[in-house]
Image (cartoon, rainbow, N blue to C red; front, side):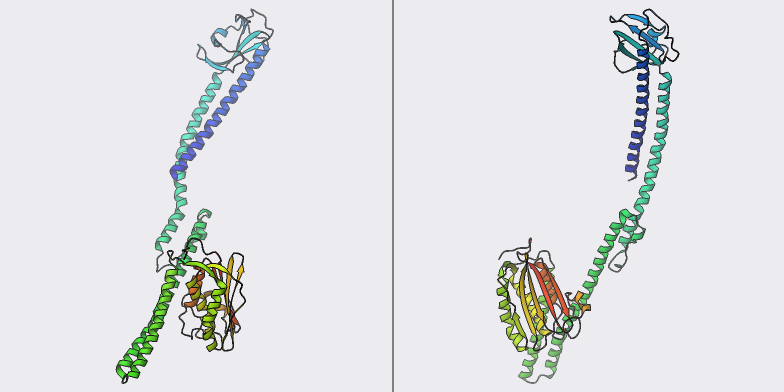
Length: 441
């Protein structure tokens, strides 16, 4: 940064001084040529053979020479041959010429009324002025380059100090210090946006670590329960069993616990696979209305046994591309949750509609509902609002699987609930399937 700053400053200084010098030199030359043009015009009418200076006191030139049409000199000042260069071209710009005396003159040639007038003036003082100007500019340019280099180094060091602070803060952050953040208020505007973005990333990482810790604790808790049940039943059976009936009862309890453990493991594996970028959906053409009717018929006995009315609202044919197995699993989870929290005599309904290029699937119940405080986290893994909602033996993964199903299809899951009035879960899915993960059946 210091080298680039010094180089750019050098280029700017050199360009500025050069431009200024050329402007001054060009202005002096233009003014001199103007003066010589006026001097040439004032010589018109000079008598041939005259050898003196014009009688005007304000005549601007120093020497002159007048030629006729053949090029012969018909009038000239006494020192014209010494101070006027040969070969002047009429009408051309003035030229600088060093006389035998060492003095510099500027001369022009102009054709007026059939005669050629060559005039000049002593330009030694002007050229000396320009030489001094060049020397003065060089004296300014050299310290300016040195100063710009020093200033560039200081500016670069000061400018990089916030970057060093950011790097030091980032080096201190680790799994045990995820709460540390970069102080944005002390940073310049150019870096504050970067630091703010970095802090937001740290917030996400901290939240992910907390979720991971909670997830690990929840897994350990959920796995501990059936394992302890299996162990307790086995120990009791070994110490107290006296008949074959006791053994069968113990084995039945073990089998039930093992089945719950297997279901929990399957759900954990599904969520883990769903979070992988390599997860591929088996998309196929599905009539959503027919699938919902099949699911209603499948779960109708469960609803009847619980004294709950299960209905499918009128749904027109809705062709869409979905993973049929995952659809059945997601809707099955929603229906199971609805049955668990809807009292006898309640009602559970499923419906689907088309909205633009999306299909909207809803499962509603008239159950106990969910308190507003719990709704933001209701789709989190292992999250159960209270003991009442977990009394059915669930492990808190059903709604997490529903959310994963929606996101895998490029959609989203939404929930609305009123305590004591019921809950409605809505899945918004693109009817044509999600681009990039399609694996046709």
